[in-house]
Image (tube, rainbow, N blue to C red; front, side):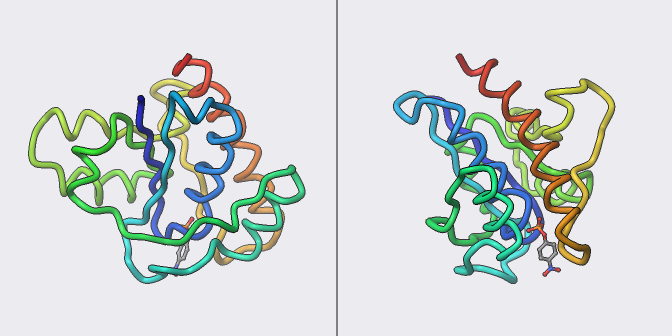
Amino acid sequence: MKKVLMVCLGNICRSPLAEGILKSKVNSDNVYVDSAGTSATHQGELPDPRSIEVAHLHGLDITDQRSRPFIKDDFKNFDYIYVMDSSNYSDVVEMASTHQEKAKVKLIMNELNPKQNEQVPDPYYGGEKGFENVYQMLDKACQKIANQLK
Ligand code: 4NP
């Protein structure tokens, strides 16, 4: 069983979409997918209504998800940790205890476009269009990740 963790700041906008999209592209017998936030501000909350809506428009239901903070044990429990932007990257890597743990952390868009360090923009303070843009970016990256996991 391979285990993948998607991480953003609040775990209510971007990483819940990444979790839902990747789950839809892999066999759950072989790949476990979860998500978390570097901040605990929204702990226990449903994904943002705009993320729920854009997922729904693309045929995905993400309303089983609840926000939770990233914890140090996640380094032990997951094989791949995908972050959305460089701020998430610094926050997560700062919690790593070993080089091996640090090496598990990757910017998700680098899977699609290696070494470009492209950021998945935080859509929280923008409109619906930002959420569709995030969905399209994550859909492409998750397709690549799903193919790699096969
Ligand atoms: P996310 O978006 O990191 O994609 O879940 C955000 C959600 C909440 C906040 C910021 C970003 N916030 O400041 O509360």
